[in-house]
Length: 91
Image (tube, rainbow, N blue to C red; front, side, top):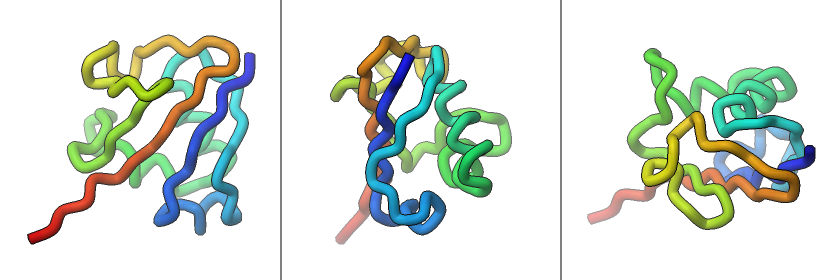
């Protein structure tokens, strides 16, 4: 099973400037673990100390916010696309 993960510009320094990474995972949580195994340091930017997705990080599976699905337990299918989008604050 192959899933694509869109890496946002601020995290690309951890992925050797790759914008799109292919992984094989059954859930969003497993996808994050696989990214961490390949690109050490990326997980701490995505999840907090309790293992939950950080408030300022938005994760989408096929354009649906995982917060309205099953969060890290959101299942993945072949050819799904995960988008990681850091929240941007401004004034």
